[in-house]
Length: 256
Length: 154
Image 1 (cartoon, rainbow over the protein chains, first blue to last red):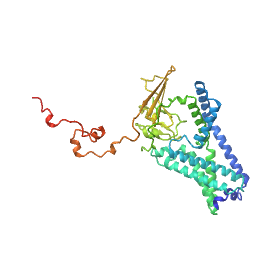
Image 2 (cartoon, helix red, strand yellow):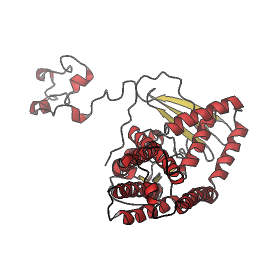
Image 3 (cartoon, helix red, strand yellow):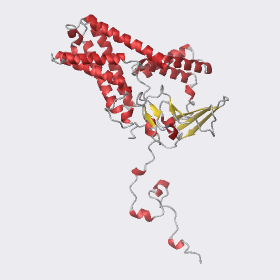
Image 4 (cartoon, rainbow over the protein chains, first blue to last red):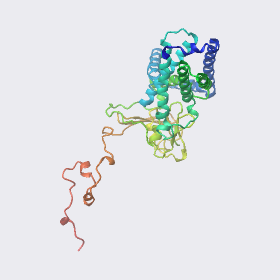
């Protein structure tokens, strides 16, 4: 029953729907503004287009049809299937978190703007949230490079953790709040307050976290594929003219 | 010049941390990307350059084969067992090399720990432990019998 109920519909008894909807719009604006600030501050767009022009002048021209095919490959392999990861565990954890985040955010927006939604939306919200928790905590405790390869404590926190930690805090607290609200607990308000704080940190910290990677990583993957198509391949040598015969020897880095 | 990492290409997988013989490739505390913590201790062995799955690490080649202003890039293709090199000199010349890195499948060579420990009598023999097996010489190495040995200069 809890999984089929819109948690925000019940909340509208104490918080006006307009307030919740305004909050969601503010979060969307914060993400857009934060991403733009990040692009300007780091000069990533400037670097991207300078690099693009540099390779274009030296390389063979890639025609429109080929560009469309590269864009489709980037979308399918690099974006939808997280093809950039060489480590299978990282890739699975990223896919869980990415698709979980999409389900979670879309269903949140749908449920906040339309309380009388079909039960599928709360169910998607729960499934998305649980996927984020599974992928996120797996990454946090076992896969992080500084834990897996550097041998640091899984509980050590650093600046790079701002995005993943605020995301995990937001989703963990959100799901706990929904569960407490469904069981009419006295702790509901406290956890709702913590959920709002974690959410605000997640979306307002875009300029300082790696939240914006979801926008610039596809651009970088596209540029990389174009550089392979036009022959510049970031100055790398062309693949050797030999048959593949030995399989892979890569093992997860666990030296420490 | 020591190694440096292109931050936009590195995905922080830790392969360079794992392979660096000087233990100077580490993960940055702010961005969780690899970086060289002690550039003046880097002997430019190219281990991390070859191991990086994203080709995100670069190093300036030794001056004897690549003078200032050049670029050296290496591509390791383990399935093909090859390392390819591309040198671009500042006068525009370009040289490409391709080297084999092995002729047997990965994992087919046993490490020392995978052999049995040498027995006491092995120490009295001419062969090193497991040597006949490794050299594929049936019946042991050809060796002189004690009576064939010269007993000193008369």
